[in-house]
Length: 162
Image (tube, rainbow, N blue to C red):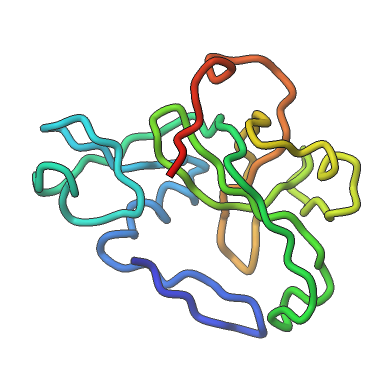
């Protein structure tokens, strides 16, 4: 699992051998998720073997980053010092059609954090469709999402309840 180093109040990732391919993908604006070549399981969080069939070395595959909001949270002060000037912002839990869930911020079309009072944040609902955007933060390229408002194959796909 990726550890985080707190620098000037903002956590930054410290990739390890399991997460390095993911972070390498983000620098190329590729959202990578592991996929087991034996049983077909999609895997998130990164790990050295498939949790279903224990096949070693799942392959990294790019996904399109289009998903649906499974949940969200809005942090309010007190927060880490590096986030004090940007709260309240929206943290999403995004579910992809392949069944994995990933967290990231809600951003506008330009990659700026959306504040909880913004109109787009108030339009959030469970099941809202979101599209991948990239945001630069302290030298790292982070996946984030924006409300897409367009139809896709996700429209009829059920959200996983866990």
